Image 1 (cartoon, rainbow, N blue to C red):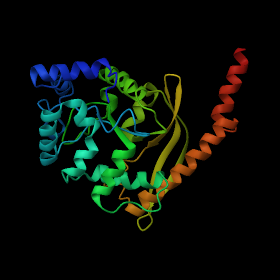
Image 2 (cartoon, one colour):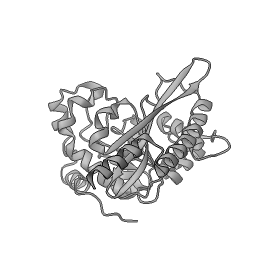
Image 3 (tube, helix red, strand yellow):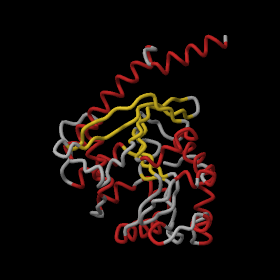
Amino acid sequence: MSLRWPSLVCKEYEHWENERQCLNARFLNSSLDLEGDSRFIEDRPPCFFAGRLGESKIMLLSLNPGFKGKRNLVEYRIFKERGWEETYLTFFDWFEKEGLSSPYYSRFAVFLSGYLGLDSFPVERRNRFRLLGENLVNIDLIPYHSVSFTIKVSRMTGMLEGYVENLKELVGLAKLEAIFMNGAVFKDLLPSLGVVIDRYESLTVNKKQGRKLKVGLGHMHAGNNSIPAVWITNFLTGRTLAATNEGLFWAGKEIAGKMLEYRSERDTGDSPYVSEKRNDLKRTQ
């Protein structure tokens, strides 16, 4: 399957083929004074997405791809064998076959299984990645890998305009039922992404420790479409939240129910947001 890729994606990979360097990683490292594990890795291929972009119904938005030694060595090998398009469209397939691990993706699969209405979450790693391969595409705003990244996005919003537009173009290539944004990092990016959050919900993800997950329910404007959107204000798969697998699974189920309720309210006009918009429309007529 070949898609009509955004110009920035094409430009980035053309630059990589010629220079074996990421297009803007060095500029961002220098401009933001990034050091150590926070630096963007300049000599590894950029990764804009992971998963079947044109087919997946669920999208997860992340800030940038992480970097782990063994896992990224395999990724680079497959990248050189297959090229960037096939490598990242089939990401979860070879991730499963190579026996690789990722707590980030593994735990999101538990959450997603609840959201999708499964009776239980997959226990074996390979089944979790199979679930992701069939349903999820992960889009990274910044395509450059890093071991960690702690800088506040508010410090770099002016540098991200091109990447924000690129992300919106990638969203436009998909046929989505829902978009999830993971982490407080997206707070400063919601308006530029066309995301409107109408209400917030709090869900228990660790009963023993009383840990709660706070999510914002809304929608994302993408061209002529309005896509249901969920902003997870905590980092869903992070250690700080300390969510159990059971907590993640049932949180997914609860969010699915609340999104159905929210969409019904918007369709009928019972939502305060929709009522306000309709009143604005009447005033302009």
